[in-house]
Image 1 (cartoon, rainbow, N blue to C red):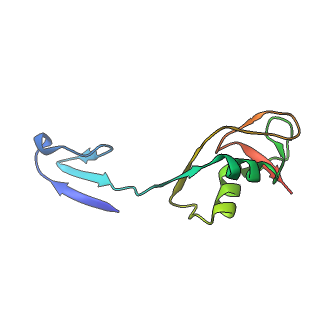
Image 2: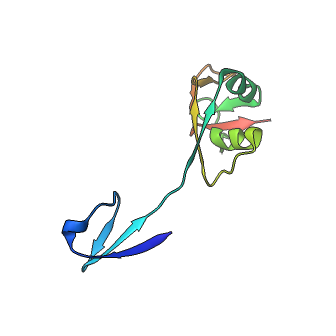
Length: 103
């Protein structure tokens, strides 16, 4: 949601505000942080068959898999994992944004 905020630069209080000719727009971003515990990381790893480090066909971000497993809204959710997941094929590290192959 964008809200115009009129006033002088001395009233500036928004992080990420855009100022143009005395008009300031601030973006309000709502994000849900979902903590992914050890059992959930382990369960998600079972759905991974390869990662971007070992497969050119990796096309699904790991957080899409987490969205499917948790039922969280992908538009609003960012994940905080208790540990980095590991690729079963190459042993590479998989974070929330790593591309994977899931079968």
